[in-house]
Image 1 (cartoon, rainbow, N blue to C red):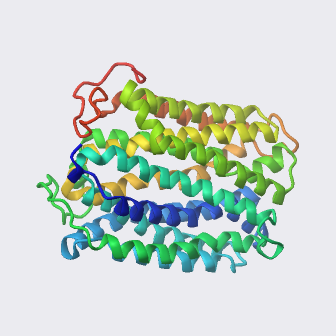
Image 2: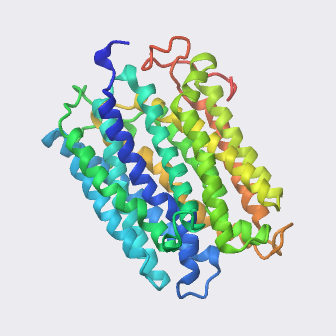
Length: 444
C-alpha cells in the first residue's frame, strides 16, 4: 500500500483515544453505575423497570439525534474543514450531564438528565465517525476501522476495570463511592477531546465525489435511499447483533442478584470485572484478529463466528444460575462483539457514498444506540411473562424468556449475512472492491 494512503499514527491515535474516552464515559454508568443509582431514587417501580426507563429514554434521544448531528457536522466540515466543534461540545455537555445525574433523587429527573448525556455524546460519536470518512483512504479503511473498533471495545474493557477497582476499594476507600466511578471517565474525556481536536482541525479532508443525495438535503426518503441497499442490509444486521449483545449486559447486576443470590454491590463488582476482560478479548480481535482471519477465509465467515458467540452466550444465560456461567457468557459476548464490529464498520465505509458519509454514519451509529432503548423497553415485558423464572434464587422475573429473545436476535443477525455485500478477501489490498454476487448460504 502506498504510504500516502496510510493515515498517520498521530491522526489514528487522536480519533481512537477520543472515541475511547467518550464511550468510556458511558460504559461505567451503563454497565454498573445506573443499576446502583436507580436503587436510591424515589420510586415504587421494580428495579429492572426503573433501569429500563432511564436507559430507554437515553438511547431514544441519542438515536433520534444521531442523523441530525451527522448532517450538521457534514455542513460544518464543508465550511470549516473539520468537525471538531461537535467533538468538543458533545464531550463537555455530556460530562456536565453525567455529573448532574449523580445528584438526582427522583426517577423522572434521572431519566431527563441521562437523556441529555446520551444526546450530547451522540454528537461526539457522529462527528468522529464522519471524520473517519473525511480522512481515511479507501485502501486504508480495514486497518483504521479495526483500530477504531478496538478503541470502542477497549473503552468497555477499561471502563469495566476502573469500575471494578473503584467499587472494590482497590484505589482507596475514599474512591469506592459509586458516584466517583460514575463520573471519572466523563471528566477525563473533556481534556482528551480538546487535545485531539487541535490535531484533527489541521487535517485536509479527501476530495469527495458527487453524492446521489444532495449533501444539504434533510432526512427524506430520497436521501435515505441514496445510501443503497447494501448499506441498509448491513445496518439492519448491526442492529440485531448489537441488540443481542445488549440483552447480555443490560441487567447483569440484577441477573446475578436474582439468579445467583449475589449482593448488589458484589454483583456490580463482578459485572464490571468480567465486562472488562470480555471487552479486552474483543479488542484483541478488533485490533488485528478479525482482519487476519477475514483475509484468509473471508469477511462473512468471521462475522458469522462473532454472531455465533453472541448466540451461545444468550443460550448459556437462559439456562444458568451460577456466577461462573455468567462470567463465561460475558467473555464469549465480548469476544464475539469485537470480532463483528471490527469488520462491519469497514464494510460500511466501503459501500457508503462519500459526499454524505457523515450523515449515513450517523444512521449507522443508530444501529448501536437503538438496542440500548429497544432492549430495556421490551425487557420488562419478557421478564414479566408467565409465573416467573424457571430457575434461580429469586424467580420473580422471567430471565429465561428474556434470553430466549436475545438468542432469537442473534439468529436473525446470522441469517442476514446472506444479504451482505462484503470486500473481496482474495486480495486484501482491494479494500474498496466489492463482490457483486451474494452467496446462498449465510456462512459461505
